Length: 211
Image (cartoon, rainbow, N blue to C red):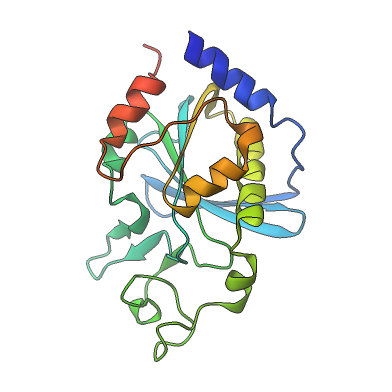
């Protein structure tokens, strides 16, 4: 009960956030959808992973690190590899939660041509130069901008019928965690753990779905 109360307060704290003026969605497959919102002329792309996109559920928002990694890579067999979920079993979490992962600014959500990925799977504009990062990405890749994008994403999720608004948890890796720290006004509480900690256990203990 206490956790639910904290998360409702957490959502009230973000009620002042600037809204969005456009939205688009497309399906990659039955499990993954790509969403887009536009806030103050800035595009925020994200993927939504779930085994039932219409069911009202708790939401887990995972913020990746600082590299301009696409969220999805299409493999030669037609399957999609999610680069940001290597530390946890997203399939298991998506059985009970909607998993939201925002893309980096000015970075493709999905790539089919891996020649534009360097050895760290970061998106590059010139396949011959492993450090040819998008100039606009370099300009916008700072904590203030990431924190602003997080706030707008959460404000958008508040409006969706598929979101259980009283049960929402944010997880951040590396710079993603720093972005959350920068956005302290939207946090009801904070947890830290190493990259090998079982994330599913963290989520289930902190935000258990209702029966």
